[in-house]
Structures are given as C-alpha cells and as structure tokens.
Length: 215
Length: 283
Image (cartoon, rainbow over all chains, first blue to last red; front, side, top):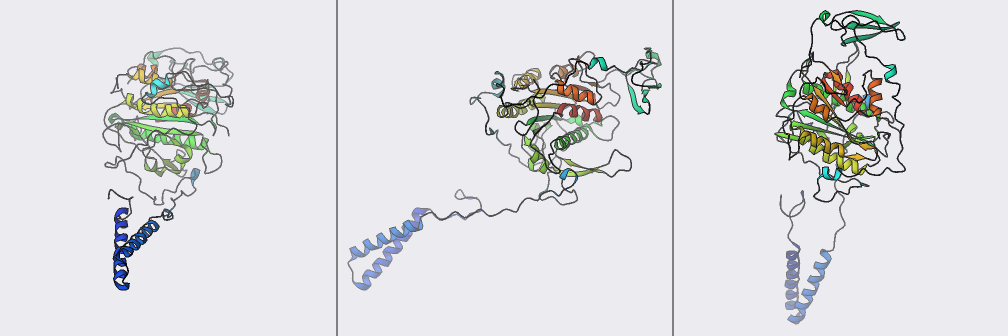
C-alpha cells in the first residue's frame, strides 16, 4: 500500500503538480492565441496566468463526500433455542479453529465508557488507584434487602450415615420423604422430614475404603 | 454491602479466569472429557444461563451484565504462554462484552446429547473453546483482568461489585509477578470496589481424580492439601445473596464460608458457577 491515500484508493499526483500543469497549459494556449491575433505578449501571458490560477482554484474546491460503499449486512442468527443460530447453516465468516496459529488479534485498548468516574492519573497503576476509598453511594441506587439467614442453622443439619458415620451420601426423593444410600458402606435407609434423624454410630471400619483428600 | 439489584442502569460484571495450562489436558474423573473440555463446557453453560436470566423477551438479551473470560496458560491467538481474552470468533480480543453482543456472537452452536433418556439433543452455543498448554500464570491473569475490572468499576460506581471467578487445576507458576505474589495480586483485585462493596474473588480447584473429597464453600482450610490453603486464603467471603443461592441449590454453607471449591468435578463446577453468578435482576 502506498504511503499516500487510504486503502482502496489509487495514488494521485500532489496538488502543486496539478496547479503547475494547468497554468502551463493556459500559458501555452495564451501564447498560441497571441501569435494568431497579434496581441501583446505581456497581455497574453498575464491573461493566461490569471485564467490558469482561476482554473486551479475551481478544481481544488472540495468535492462532495461520497458515501462509503455499503457493506453487506451481517447475517443474523435464525431463531432457535434462545434465539441462537442454526448450526447447520454456514457461518458468514469462518470461526477460528482450535489453537489456530498465525492469526493476530489486536487487543482493544481500555476505553473509558461514558460517565466513567475514572480519576486515575496517567501512569498510575490500577491497583494503586483501586486502593483508594470506595465511591459514595448514589441516591438513585436501589438496594435489595439481604436474605435473612438467621434461621438457616436452626433449619439445617448435616446428613450422616447412621451405620458408619460417613458423609458421602446419595439422596433421592421418595413418596414419603427421602431415600438415602451411603457410598462408603452401602447402607440404605429412609427418612421423613419432621422425624428425628436415626442415631449415628461412627464406625470407620464398616466403610469399604477410606478416601483421604487428594490434590 | 452486596445489596444492589442488577439492572440495565446499573449492570453487573462477571469475569472468569480460565486456566488453560498443560495440566488441563488430563481426563476429568470418570468422564470422557478432559478438564479443559469440561471447564469450557461449564463456562459456556454458565454464559447461556446468564443470557436466560437476562432474557426480557424471547430471543433478546437485556444488558444486565458485562462478561469477560480471560484464559491463562496457552494463548491460542497470540501464541506462547500468557493471558488473553478467551472469547473466539467476532468477539476475539474483547476483554468485556455486553450480554446482547455475547448472545449475537457465539463461535458455533453445537448439539449436545441430552441428559434425559430419549430426549433430542440440546443445541448449545459456544463462546469459549477448550485449549491447553504451557504453565499457569495466575498472577498475570489477575493483573490483566484487574485492569479491566477497575475500569468497569469506575464506570459503574453504583453497581453490584464485580465478580471474578478463577477456574484452575494447578499451582501458580508466576508468583511473584512484577514484584507481587498471588496473595497481593488477589488483594489488589478485591480492593476494587463500587459503593456496594469490594469486588468478589472466587476460586475453584479442579481435580482429575474422580474419588477425591469435594469441599464447597468451606469456612476453614483445615485438612486441605496444597494448593487448597493458598486458594482458600485469597477467596472472598460468600456474601448473603450467594449463601442463599447455595442453600437453594442444596449446598450447605457454614457461617464464614468462602467462595472456594476444592476437588470439583464437572457437575460441581457448574453448581459452583451457578452459585457465584446468580444475582437478582430487575428492569
């Protein structure tokens, strides 16, 4: 691409060259006319230069801006589940393949959105700027009351296998409550909400294996 | 703190830090997918769930959230090791994306087998692909994402604080990074705040071992092997709205429980992400 002009444009001569070319043409025409009608050479040259300058001024006036060529509208996804595109349709542009190499994607610079209250001075790191006090709450900001968790512990218990004391349990909803299965000792029992939990005996020896946490 | 509803006037911000290191190539528990594939799938499901939450009318997403995904480890676009936005396709290179833009620009829509026997396959959009390679530059991930989170918080001082969820299977390999260790980078991140409170940093550690003991939202790091205590220490306290999310999902949370999961399998990664990203929205 040339250093002059935008992509897609042909390079053009600089304006000074155009001006000199037009004035030279007018001068040649003026001299020819002076020879034909026997006019003063000085007058012929002066008229030719003036006409050439006028022509240059007219041609250099800005032309009306041409509209940019219209790009085809991007293909919109067809309605589907949640309005997503039909996978059977060919995408308008190929998606990058997994691990595609050689493609350069420019990371967009951080742009400050409109209304941003960004008081970070130039050169200051974000973490230094973030260490300041929090922004004051706006009067227009609406709050949602936090959920009441005060009764949470009173209504919750930790399920434990009555036979071996393990915590790795499978629970399935049953017609009259819950069916439990201990993954450690295979014990199966049922429990109804509102009834006491069966007495628990911690008997690690009844477990098939002990599974310490592993990284 | 943590009392603001998400609205179009005061949208929320959810940022995922996705480990794309070489160890993510391991098979995940008893499943047939690698941890990289499982994490990408869970992430795509969570993004879709955010879109459903923000669906004002069928087929349209309201701008309730700005979402970012930063991969660390292999950089599939820039090459080599480092951190880069993980969205693909038309969103490639964009650090934070508004939900309507996310909705309109998946990389692909793929058919996934349904969990219900006999049901037709689901059509699931994909925004993030599974890749893996190199080491685990977690500090750099916090540094890069933090810059965008800071700019976002500056522009949305009345919003619910930004939520950052780090999904990893390994030990950090770039600490200290630019003179600061992982603890300090995490502290810098949660120093970012809106008028509703500090940013929230949650961490979930994946394990390839199918039989490993799962820990979700613990109040102590007692008994956890490395890197459990390190990740527990940098995880934010679970705020009341998310404690309520966990309880409604049947996950018990002790008082003082943190946004931290250890030895998660694919199912529990999805549950963890649901708890960490579900916030009430209004018009």
